[in-house]
Image (cartoon, rainbow over all chains, first blue to last red; front, side, top):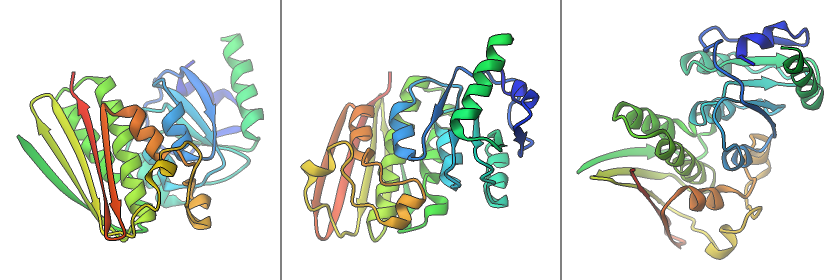
Length: 113
Length: 137
């Protein structure tokens, strides 16, 4: 599954414009504590699902080469966060569903690809 | 030997992680292997965050000497009451505001330890010095 495939899910919308849409998605990880993410995400190309509206989610995404950050449950990041993500070529999405529901949607879509 | 020094500002949550990001970009330009860069990114991010959220401010020195990379963080206090506690997973003294920003998982020092080849921490009320050694492969 690639980042651009996320665009086909109704509950998810892209907020950034400079990320690599052809980046692979190797896995998903859902967490709202950044150091936990930093210590536990061992692979590259992982999608982070979170409700933590923080500039530091972008920093984590950049440092760990995440494929995308999806802010769930309608949590919409401030423009400053979106601008920073564009500067760092990070993909940011917003989902109207919970982290779990979004992960399930992604999993279901992956299975039909 | 190359040495770079960066200033870290206390409570500047918006820019926390910027130095780690700059160090990572520098190492990519040097063509250093991805696994080493990943370890440096994790260790440098955690150390920087600690200075931002726990200290009165400080500096970061990045020293590259052959295949030895050293990250040194020196802050102006107030120090760590018990370093052994700080090394435990889940132990945190982060404030409510820090928690709301996603910090305070109590994984800072454990992550630094796992990502480094050697970690030295010395602390007194006058300040803390964290030195992270990572071998470049």
